[in-house]
Length: 184
Image 1 (cartoon, one colour):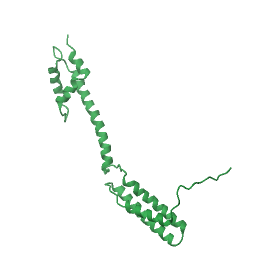
Image 2 (cartoon, rainbow, N blue to C red):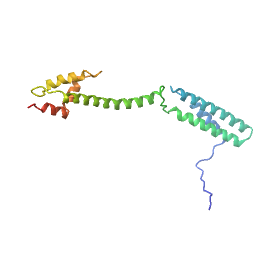
Image 3 (cartoon, rainbow, N blue to C red):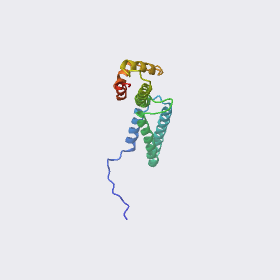
Image 4 (cartoon, rainbow, N blue to C red):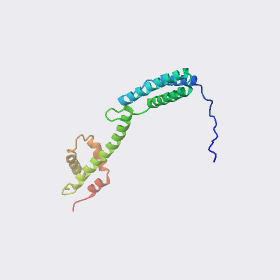
């Protein structure tokens, strides 16, 4: 069985000096990190120090004509710099000290969903109270049902815009059925 593979060169390899200069430029471009996340800042500093150290070691090894070590340190520096580049646009969700973008994305999404769920639950609870209320002798008319509605919403804190919610409630089929019923 032949284990040899055919390799093609995608581009000419760069020299040590070209690679070193490219990595130094990348390090300078990505040295600053703007985040409120203290852990992310700490890790960024660790990776930055590692990149600086590895570039120094690479240069020393190159000056001693130790090519294998020089390239090893360049690869390690490239890994650290790659982390710095990737972390610049990253979002860091953390409890208690979340990055603003991740916090807004999560809270905004959750808040919008919860608001809809909670409003539906409150509306259903009000309808349940109206349906279980004893109807007047002549049956429910809109005025009597509105009085019962006003009693039902007294128990809810921060129940805003009750007139709009009343109009929306009146459009529900189960409320229409209550209004259409007449007591015998």
